[in-house]
Amino acid sequence: MSKNVTTLKEAVQKYMEHLEAEGKTERTRYTYSKDLDLALEFFGEDKKLAKLIPAQVAGFFKSDLVTTVPKSGREKSQITITKTKRVFRQMLVFCREQKWIEKLPLTKDEAAKVKEKADPKKTEPKQVKKADSQQPAEAATEEK
Picture 1 (tube, rainbow, N blue to C red):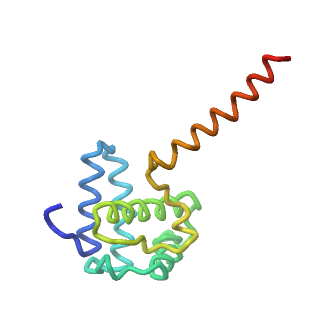
Picture 2: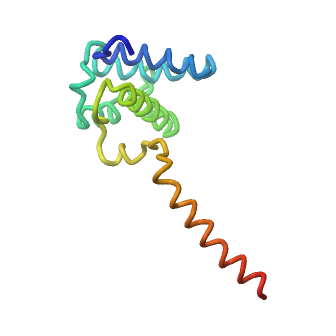
């Protein structure tokens, strides 16, 4: 990227552009933007990405903005809460991939939910082991 993104608002804008470039549907982009608007409201548009810390993100995830329907005050469904958290995590992963942040500002529990892109060097041995473990089972079946 030619411009170094530093604020949450800039990151959200760039992430939404990225989703459009990836061919995400208009409806998906709309719902993601609504989820990310909650983060902008909680942290403020000028929040520096580099200043986000896990405790603040955890606070956002537990906030009424994420967990409560604004007009009625009732609890949002767990599906909605989970989606809002996932969208924010995905945006943070995008920011890290763009090298706008070095480390994800997530608690251990939330960081465990992030699916890292597969490293071919790490996945190859696992594939070989699966093939090896299947061969004896197949061979044993054939012998019977």
